[in-house]
Length: 276
Ligand code: AMP
Ligand code: FE
Ligand code: FE
Ligand code: ZN
Image (cartoon, rainbow, N blue to C red; front, side):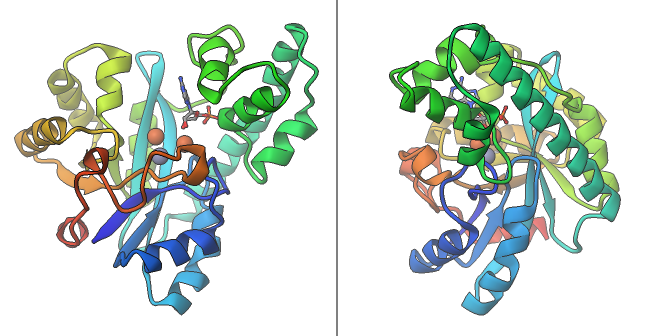
């Protein structure tokens, strides 16, 4: 059993790389993919720890991109060699744009009368603060009752506190991963159905023209029936199948490491063997 989609506290997960590796070993995973948002610090830290623990570690990334003006997450897997150096320096630019976005978002929220500072946000986000850290702070300070309410009212793309940042288009992000020697996979396709309200079939046709190579069929948010539909679509477009829980630790407590399809299915080792 494997899990190819997890987050550490170097993005918006709550587990350190060491704790994540230990947990993966404890539940008997054979391979673990770390796919933090827009950075590889968690993966880098996990490399020696996983080697020591005898756990196969897969180098991954989850990029925030835009397609038709709305958010789409794209996974990239570097299965045979590490990403080309220019990919990492491009990720550095994404970090800069996040920091800049965070400062502007603090100003915007302060405009609503919230007494928050960039230092408080960054203290919660360690190396990379994101909207989930804003949400946690808003809850702590009593400006929202729950994390979900903080998103609904202020932080969601459609909410009044949202601030745009420099994000690549899906097409650019696919190109960057391919050029860096990676395999681009569309993350949690179920979310596109909700956000874009278009036919996934038609969108996938377009994404294949952009160079997409795989589809995340196994994911915690997918029902078994949805996963079956996605598998059919992957077959139709000659896309490989990837899979993971999207574990974030205490940030998303309902998601269990190593499980997909709403906690009903594990992710078999052959998914990784086929990718390779
Ligand atoms: P960021 O990358 O800083 O823009 O934050 C994006 C993260 O915020 C996503 O990966 C989700 O974990 C979370 N997120 C975004 N939109 C929502 C939402 N409407 N409700 C709950 N969580 C969300
Ligand atoms: Fe996340
Ligand atoms: Fe995602
Ligand atoms: Zn994720």
